[in-house]
Every structure is written in structure tokens, then in C-alpha cells.
Length: 260
Image (cartoon, rainbow, N blue to C red; front, side, top):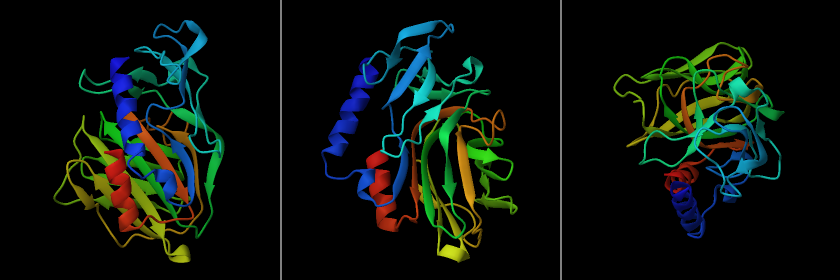
């Protein structure tokens, strides 16, 4: 519990420093670090009554998370009712705070679909620590809509089934057990220019800057490409979606400073 209190104290200090991600227009969804999370089963699967929550500061190690409520007023809540699919309240080591841990079979559903229209700009910001680097999705909907890490040097997305978009680095790699802030954007309307930015011990644009895809994009899974498909193995802190906005360099800098 001390680790959670320390983490929330740090968040509080950041929020009083003058910047919030919601200061950037078009924030559609925010699954916020250690906020609005509940667990309705303990580590053994026994029902919890009352449920444990971050609000009440009652979460315990191994609790099975049934809901992570959207911090905006738009109600894109991540939920899971099936016990074997629920992420767990855990941490990598004593030096890390507790947070949702997605093992090989865990994921969550959005209780309403995030639909990004064709030709619409967007930015998706995730803070993730990978435990495995091969075909592990951070979010998606089906085989035609997903974003995942594909290897230590590459990420892959598919938008509306129009083929794979691969962001591959020739001289840098992603490590396990390290947190990365990953920003995936689309800009310029019908041109659909795709960009990927990664920050984890160093910031850079990642992979190709010539990819384009203006198709509609659907997201209703967190921690998987689709139900029970390419599930994430790792930890998540924040997931933010800006719909109708490609983040500027100044926006990205403010977010990186806030999140890290």
C-alpha cells in the first residue's frame, strides 16, 4: 500500500505543476495510472465483497482486475468478467509500484467500441513494460485492427485490414522490463501519414516515416489484438487516445514529461 500512496503522491505533484494531458484538446479516453481500478476477486479467485479499489486504497497483490474506468467523461471503460482473462494487480519488483499486469492469457474489453473514422487524425499514447517482445498486442479489435510489438526492433499495426504497417529500427531495440512511452499518430486527413515515437531511456521517432493508411480504425481490446489473440505480456501504466488530433512536438514533450 505504501508504494501506491507514493505513486499517487507523485501524480498529485505533477498535476499541480500546471499540465494535464486533458489540457491537449480531443482527449477521448484515458485509462489512468493506478486510478479508477477495481478488483472483484482475490488472487485465488474468491469473490471480494466489497470489491477492492484504488479509490479506497484496498487493492492487494494478485487481485483480479474486473474494471479500469475511463478517467474522462466519455466512459470508454476497460472491463473483464471472465476470471482466467482478468489482469492482476502486481509489480515487477519492490522498486516498482503496483499496476495492472497482463500475463499470457490476460486482456480487457472496452465496454464500448472506440471508432476512429477514415481520414481522421488520431494519437494513441501508451506506457508499457514488455515481458515478451514477439507479436504481443497493446490494443486492437480483430485481425484487421491492432497495434503490437512484433520483435525487439519493430512494431506493427493494421488499420481497417489494408495491410501491415511495419515500424522497424535498424540501430535500436526494445528491452524487456523497461517502461516505454509509445505514441502512435496519424495526421494529414485523407493522406493518413503514420508516425511512431518511442521514449524509454531516450526519445526518438521509430522506423519508417513514409507509411500511410487513412482507413477507419476500431479498438475494443486492451492488452490483446482481439479476444484471446496476441495477448500482451507485461505491465501498463497509462493509455490515452486523442481522436481528431495528431500530437505536435510540443504536445509530445509535455506528455513525456508528465508521464515519466
